Image (cartoon, rainbow, N blue to C red; front, side, top):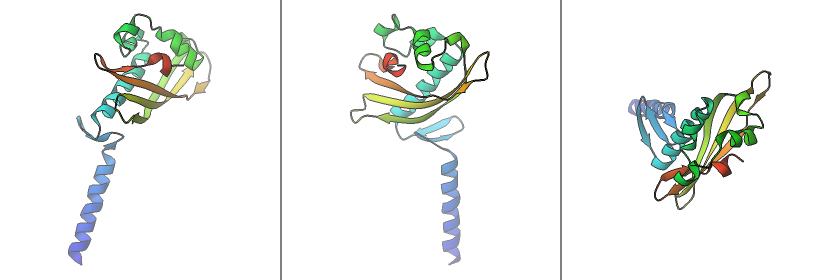
Length: 152
């Protein structure tokens, strides 16, 4: 009976540790990540990178998540103004988080749902829009964001 209780206790501790280090796409301990889906993990990281570029107003870098053909014509500030209904210079992104990553059965299309907290500068208004970013796996470029559809 005592062995059973010790084994049960060890299993509970192990389950707690796994829960503590679990992420949406696998486990992460320090800088080491064990992913259940490499694509989902990659898309989560790329979406966070994109939001960080937007937060720091690096629109040229933010355009690099688009396909090579579309990079020349995409206008990130205009797309941001459409989604947030705020001119980019008055937009202060306070924080963001990825809520979910979904891939289709072919694993060539994905959507990443995020929640972003933004403040309108020169006001006390705070908004928390949920945004879905759409990704497509291009044979040449790898995963590229469909910014036009994501930010509409």
